[in-house]
Length: 430
Image 1 (cartoon, one colour):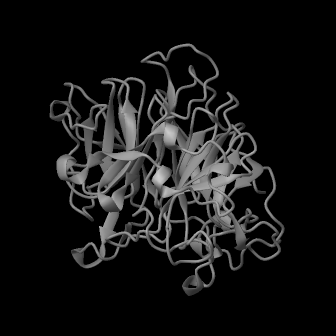
Image 2 (cartoon, one colour):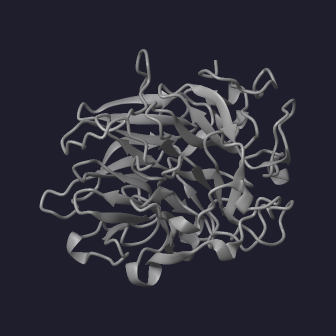
């Protein structure tokens, strides 16, 4: 997820003060929360209403940002299940700096709509789950390039299966209107429709995105144990590069393996982020030991930098890193999605209810200390993002602050979904 505010958006050219205050953002249980440092204040940025995955600040200096979204279903024991559904059913939503929904969404167009809605996407509903739109596609990672184009990763049907299925994809929407797209990498056979949604030949659980200073895109592919580095010059600059079917020729994507399981020992890498204290990169793995390592600009591990040790799957005191990000002084934050697997195998794994945490790692002697939790009690947190207000306009709520929702749900499951089938519009969702 994505992961520091590396989208290229800046309000000023002023250099970041290494001790400047910063905000740490994370998604969990259909909301987005933040930790303001150094005050330690925690609050909701987006109350429960569909967001999931990486938060990416949009270039332009206004503090607008995007997240992935899926419908918040009534059975999720979440007040967001009573709010209007966005359209298309699955996509990327644009939010104002104060966390209000702008009314703007982007998705890959297709025929699949929610009742009463007119805008469809190409991700079909999951018939085995009562035609819900949560298991056949989920946008998790995102990043804006230097031209303001938006990239996002779709997990496909990867919902804890080991090994992950090869139906994930990388999608790009083009600024300034984001109404044209290219599927840069994705399934090439089978599946549904002309884009082979949930077919084969795509990415095995793509992770959170970030860009290198030269414009190359880092793409973790957990199922292959790799982080790919895609050359900036090979990324499409307009939808015309994809033709009428929206599929970018795979041969036009020029990439190389930046980090590989065989040399890094990272079993399932899901995020990479720039560490400003060493001009190197942190890379994590949701399962296994090590949990976080550091590599140089060529992807070569830096053993002298140390590593964050991994912990056992399902350990109450252990952690399962998903997203990670660095503060200006090099302090590391990572999401513990807190994975457990049934029967102690890797066949059926998933997040522990109320087990998610935001972990902080400091470097008192130049090497990482043991991670400590700075926020906890969350359900399926995925990404963490750091934004520095002295460098760019950072999202922040207006009005009275409300603490993050954590622990068991305080509201019972809504008996039904939203009272109206009308599409969601701008605002806070009512």
